[in-house]
Image 1 (spheres, one colour):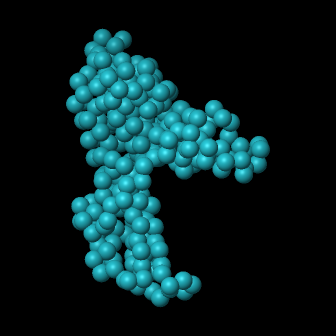
Image 2 (cartoon, one colour; image 1 turned 90 degrees about the vertical axis):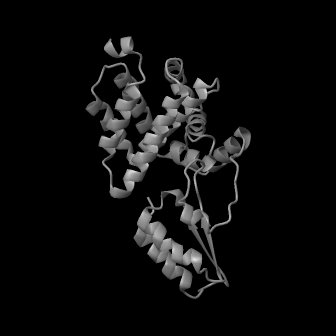
Image 3 (cartoon, rainbow, N blue to C red; image 1 turned 120 degrees about the vertical axis):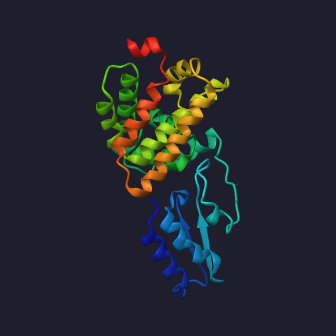
Amino acid sequence: MVKVDQVRALSSFAVASPQVAQRKVAIIDRADQLNINAANALLKTLEEPQPDVTLLLLQESGRPLLPTIRSRCQTVTIPTPDMEAANNWLVGEVQALDEAARPSAQVLAKALMLSGNAPRLALEYATGEFIGLRDKAFDQFKQFMKGRVPVAEAAKAFKALGLEDSLWLFEGWAADLARLSLGGSAIDTEAEEMLGFLARSNPTWRAHKLLDMVKEAREAGVYNANPELEASRLLIAWQKLMPVKRRAG
């Protein structure tokens, strides 16, 4: 989440004189995560730009910027590279790591799958803790859906991921559910069997309802929402998609 103090520091940087070059460039990574106060603080800088400043606001596809911010920016769409290009870049990056810390080809392939073929995010996944934490959360998700563990226990695995990564997972699964219900394929191939079962039992609008709930949870994150409570709320909504006989068993 981009906070107001970070934007205020950026505003001070924007009005200061350049120290090295003739121009200054600032990048706001994940500008779609600007909270309301941070967005309002940024508006003045956007409305009265300094001639020697270039601001780059990066936004995840499908996660819109606030209209007041978007209306003051020029939009440039950067497509995700194809699988071969993404994999070649990723392999090249991990070659620089010590052999003991170098992820296997299987881990790299899984990282690309989970990142939706976004190579930099895949690199973060492959060299960090995300994949292990995601696998534990996914296992708890499946066990909860089958009625084998209580919601409180399943939610703990998502708490370990943190709110944003948990929402990323729920959002991806809901989007895959929508794709499968329309005859498409899932991006998360490991979840495809379970999601395909749910897609055959539910209309497409239920997937979009889940996406709306993820959006609401992300907005609640501005106010330091509890990751465990948000995960519990989403898990309960997912379990309602199970056929009645399966839920009872």
